[in-house]
Structure formats: C-alpha cells, structure tokens
Image 1: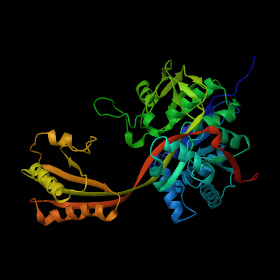
Image 2 (image 1 turned 120 degrees about the horizontal axis):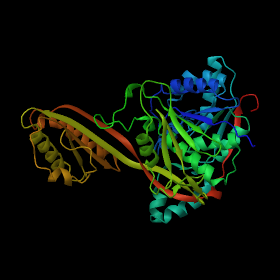
Image 3 (image 1 turned 180 degrees about the vertical axis):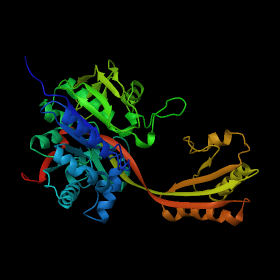
Image 4 (image 1 turned 135 degrees about the vertical axis):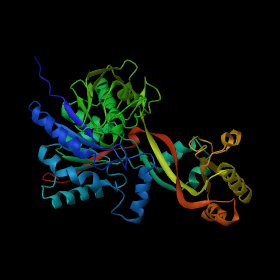
Length: 465
C-alpha cells in the first residue's frame, strides 16, 4: 500500500502588523513538543502574516526615507525570541515580513541569527509583487483607465502598487532548501499553501488539494481570530483567558484536509463556532473564493469537533485559478485632520452638539464628520444623517470628535485650530483637547494578467546562498 507523509504542522504567530509580539513563543514550544511526540519525518512551519491593504504603502514611505527600512517594523520583537529555538528544532519560517523591502528584512534576520549565536539560516526572498515599475506601468494605466478618466489616473501620486502573488515561489524556495522565506505582498493563505506544496509535492494545478490548503491558510491567517479572539462576546460567546490566547496551529494531511488546533496556553478556544466564523470571514462568494493559487469552493465544507480545541475541516473543493491577479494601488490622498474635546456633567450632550454646530458654521468649506463618543460614534455616518435624526438625549459624559479631509494641508489644519479655540470660545466646560494631522493614503484595486506579473525567489544567506 502507498505510504503518505505524516500531517504537516503549520503554526501562525501573527495576523497583522501590530499583533501581539509574544504570540510566537507558545506556538513554537507547542510545535516542538508535537514534533517530538509525532511520527518520523514530520515537518513544521511557523508563519507570520503582517500585511494589510495599506501596510505596504506605509512601508514604501519608510523605505523612501531610509533605503534600509520598509519591512515589518516589529520584525525584531516578533522573531528574535523564537528564531534560535525554531531553527534548532528544524521549524521553517514563512512570512510576509518583507513588505516593501524583503532583501533588507532578510539581512536583518541574518544579523539576528549571528547575534543569537546560531548559524545563519538559508534565507530566501520572494519578489515580483511590486508592479509600480516601468515594466507594468502602461498596462496598469490601461486597467485603471477602465475605472476612471485617464487624466485622473495620470494625476495620481502613486505610493505603491502590489499584486497579490501566490504560493509557487514560496514552494520553490523551500524546495531549494530555504529555512526562512521572506515575502512581500503574497496572498495571505499562500503562506500556508507554499509549505504544503513543497512538503507533499503537489502540482500547481492540483485544485482540490490546493483549495483545501488555501482554506487551512485562511483559518490561520488572522491569528487569534480562529482561537476565540475576535469571537469573544461576554455572556454570549465566552472565551477563557483572552489575555493568553494560544495562536492557531493547523495539521494538514496529504489530501489537504486540515485539523485546526492551538498553542498550548490556558487562553482561547477552537470550536465549531470559531472555525465557522473564520471560515466565512471576508469570503464574498462561498462557491468561488478567489486566490492566486486556486478558486476554492466551500459550499459543501464540513466541520467536525474531534476533541476540545480540535476541529477538522473537510469537503472543500477547488477549481482552476483566476487568469488575473488583484493589484492594490495606494496613492496620496491629501490630509486628514482630527480634533477631540470632552464635555461632562448636566447637559453635556447638548453642549457637545452645540460645539459641533459651531464648528460646522465656522468651517463651511470642509465636509465635517462628527461623532459624539458616548452617544453615536461607530457607524459609517460621514454625512451626519444618523446623528441628526437621533433625538438629543441626556448623556452626561460625551467626547466630541470631528474630522475632515482636504487636499491641502493648510485647509485641513483649520479644523485643529478651531477645535482648540473651543477651550474659551465655548460651549462651557470643554476640556482635554487633542488633535492630529495625518497624510491620507487612498486605495484603488484592479486586475493584471498573471503573465504580466513574473515572480522569482532568491537565496541570499546561508550555506547554499
């Protein structure tokens, strides 16, 4: 009878840039323990997902200011505590730490290894996602021109343009012996699909297996969300010890089916409910979840609770991958001005409303967003219709937040000055003014043909580099 490799273990230690920096420790410890108790030949990976839609643009701005910057700013905090233990245990690391500068991130990891006194690992970078250069400029202009007038396209002050690339260059780097793979903008699930392709030897058109591994990666990609983090709702959906949630670990078998577990910590849980919520998270069409690697179909997916903190996912099917790749283009979008002031005591809400009305009349050329924190502040109410329709109440502790955007900084800055003036210009009892001025980044998306986005990997460090 044919023999199959034992299940692949993939732990995730970050769901975004700014995630808990101590999450990796328990994941690595748990992976080491399971490798020790598991069958011979079993392998484990540690992945970090640290990019969101605008993260790359912010990284590109940092790289403009410093050519050696532009990668994940928390790289040291996230990776240094576990790098030596992972390498000694044979746990390989795949991440999108690279952001706008994968090479600099790879160099930093090599320095880190030297400082920790362990051999520098074989580090590979994956490139090709950056499509802001001359090779794709005309095609990008053409595709954007289908959405907006070309003069507006030409007027964009582009900060970054990156395609969501897939798992193939990650798998190729791992097959070439990379112990650490540093990517820029890859599709989030591809961080798990690449290791599975390399470990099991799947072809790039093995659609069912790729789709199953894609959904395993999708369950992992948001870190603690699948382990009860974003799920928690006291009195309704209880989660133990959220201060010490164990981040997720997936066990992927040779067919791509996965069992989701978590790091061995007192906090968090993996249940049918947490897995179902994450499975549907950001999925617009359950029959056609599009990634660069495959089109995944979860309409017949099944989840089964095998044991506490062990949920198995099966029934995922795959279809041929899309011909085009999604591109996010970030461009300068003027300035965002924000100002806040608090009112407390009797008639606090009425005074906050009067302050907002005063600002509107003082700043007729700015479109103000007004929030009354403590009354109404979290809805998408930029036009102010919901707040205007809400009858005045008697809230006794209200913080007024006002925001406006403008292409010119000087015009936006008028808002911050007017909020400051409320101290003495009234209404009564205002205090605790804070203001901020932030350069805005706007995002436009389009599609580019796959063949217009060539990808590659390069070994930069280690014995075979």
